[in-house]
Amino acid sequence: MQLLGDPSDFQRIPIKDLFDFSRTEDWLGSFFHTAIRGLNAEIELYELLDLDAEGINDPEFPQANEILDE
Image (cartoon, rainbow, N blue to C red; front, side, top):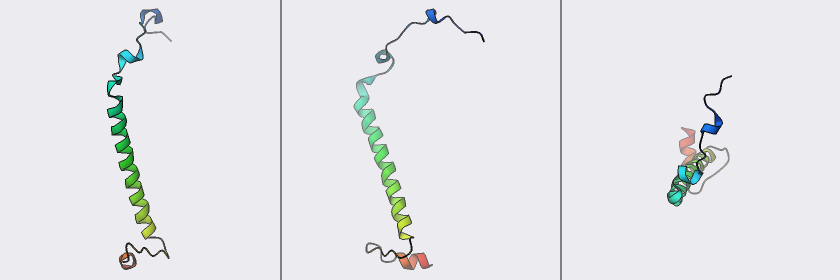
């Protein structure tokens, strides 16, 4: 196996020079909101699956049995 370059030819660059960390809070806020949206969608799915469970009467959705019987 042949190396493409001599490791001594490479210059060390501090990570702070490679990335702009001044907007870290914006990125974290965006990530947080995306994660919350995903969790809310998952909760909605579980609620829909619970409506289909046998023997469960949901007082917030009394029409569930009629819809499930169709």
